[in-house]
Length: 433
Image (cartoon, rainbow, N blue to C red; front, top):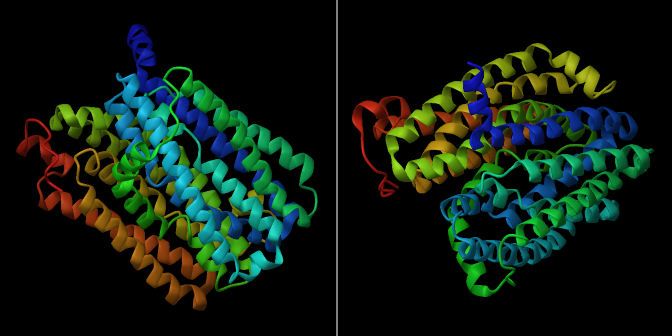
């Protein structure tokens, strides 16, 4: 038994899972430390403004990242033994991100002219821009594709710790809200530059050019559609809500959303670690990939249900401890969002871990886009009337639609991982999309 445990601990996949859990632990513990501090120092209104700006910045992150966290990770995993190919991919992704950063800045400047909060708080707007670019240019995708996460995980944890120290030292009054995103961005820049140096220490340094960048954009197009569709009912909800209600209402929703996402993040490392492995295995044998998908569904499903029940039952305590007085209105929102946890856990495996490695990008994107549009319609109907409660229900109903559609599609095509063993054998053909 001891020998088996040692063998498992030496396995690259297991080590990457542990490394990603280190990153996720930091993503979990640091918000648990910073959110109680910020909600008490800033108050519901200023906290809501920071959350609104961060949600706007996440749209910019979405544009600049362009789905490279999935598409480029997949390509690095496929060509990990080719130094030249990795160098081309690295240069192409960086060049593409620079082009997309310029485009997103133009769009942000145009949008800011019609958003009152940004006109009244220009420093908050620019700190959000800086934070977005610092997050978007990270190199996690490169090292994830190589299944070498330990060092870059340490960098990420160090950056979060540095940001936490800066926030405690320099964010002392409500008017310091803009410093929160500025400090988080500065820490991410340090981490990103270090990762870039490490990447170019092992592959030839190439300047981005149009050929490499165009190829990167082509490879990432379907993943960009997927991430754009997902954003319609994930990253942008706080921003959408802020267009209809006062900042303090946004603060209630944002606080509950951040708590629910922190708990959902406990399952994230399994998804991130399995994805590059699934991309490799699916090219070799669908039967082996189906076994891995089944294990992932069982683990993520049970984990999602357990965490969801814990969050639902302890919502009043979590809000009181993490958000403080004045945030009681976040309790019903957190209980509604707790319903998301098992659904997202399962849909991540069905979609990202199973459909994408099999080349089913188009039906996957169609499902996600449909769910996103449903969320937008529900938000436009429910948020003006029911505020933060309406927004929470629009997200839950949209995710329920997405998860159900994924399973129905796979079951009808007889490629449900649980029935696959009986009906299929052989190699992946990638022609089922």
